[in-house]
Image 1 (tube, rainbow, N blue to C red):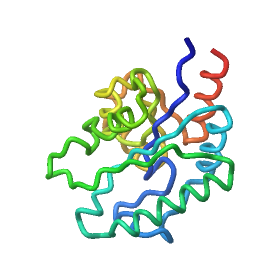
Image 2: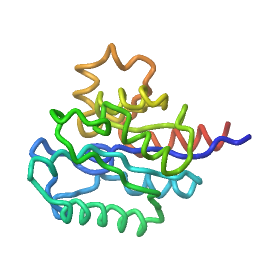
Image 3: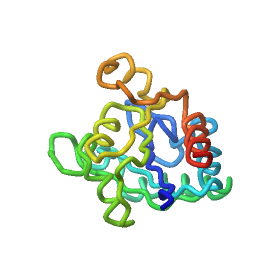
Image 4: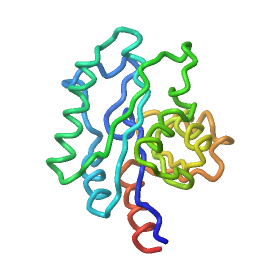
Length: 186
């Protein structure tokens, strides 16, 4: 039986430029060069795509749900313009101190994608730029992939020992190319 082509992506630092001061509005939400085209390439190759993102700026009062929805609308519109499609966008609105089940590195967001789609996440790829993405993927028995954009280089420097066996790519374009080549030619 053929394996479902499904990939989960972190948002900030993987698809769009990240900021330690938080991305607070659609005007600040800027895609990383090539990331929207990578989403379109994955879509053309038959992948279903979900975005999973921690958004503690909501709990901190740095932006509201309307601003977050505007950022996600911009992402969806750009992806659609380039021929991409996003199955869903799920996010955790909590701060780390709230100890919720959904905030990465906990696997709650990833499992919510499974609950909504009926997919078995085991072995499916999750592309992120931080150790919390890798840990959430491992906890959900997914296949973590790390990109060097966003927090990726810092993650490599600080967590090298914890990243054994995790494939590392320059950016989402390179990770998408690997997935397309692997899934389409295996």
